[in-house]
Length: 89
Image (cartoon, rainbow, N blue to C red):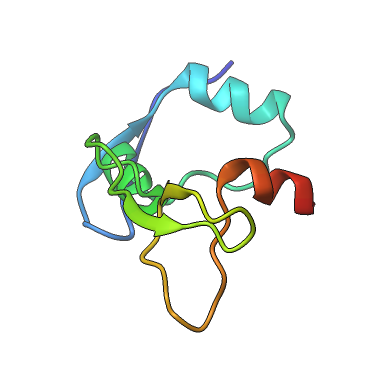
């Protein structure tokens, strides 16, 4: 069976516990590598800071309607509202 392991985060250097249940989950998913980062560093790396995502105002290049996008629009690239973007795919 699995036992809790103490690992060291490669980003912050803090120790964290790789629990027996997490090890079992990794085995079920056929993951061969142990986690290298603690939960806080994994979340930060994925961009989950816990706060709301910053949205920017834009005008859709297709329909001309105002919209909000999760990135800062640039003048050299068109921006589409979610409906027009979905229709383009």
